[in-house]
Image: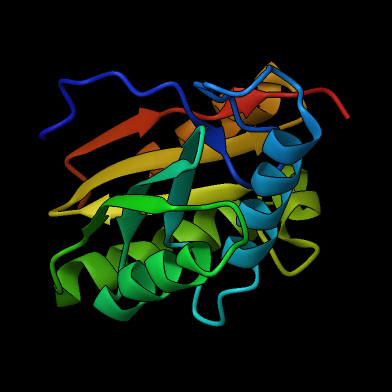
Length: 177
């Protein structure tokens, strides 16, 4: 994977983004841009549990990162962020996952294994699921937030139990509710 660079961004789902700001930290303009970027990305019509979009704000520049299953989602994300007042530049580093019937089958199996398990069903409520399932060539990455270390470990164990997976990287963050 081409992830040798470390980016200080946090998931859209439940955490505020970290910013590399040239504006004053916590300035109203900076907070407004962050809030609007988050809102616009979450409102994208095809943004789902198998996609992960992260962002960072640096002054008037927004950097988009993550993985999506549809090329249109990558361009849609860039287009909605460009329209936000105060955003002058958008750096789109979102990766479009390669189409693969095998990966599609794994995504469905992983969804059932994680969200269908009784102890993790609470995360299936709501439109935006807090556990993102990213599958690339049989390798799985779990992104998002959970309430406890036990839930994080359980999601990892459930993902590892799905046949046909080569590896699982559990990047879930624990954020007590």
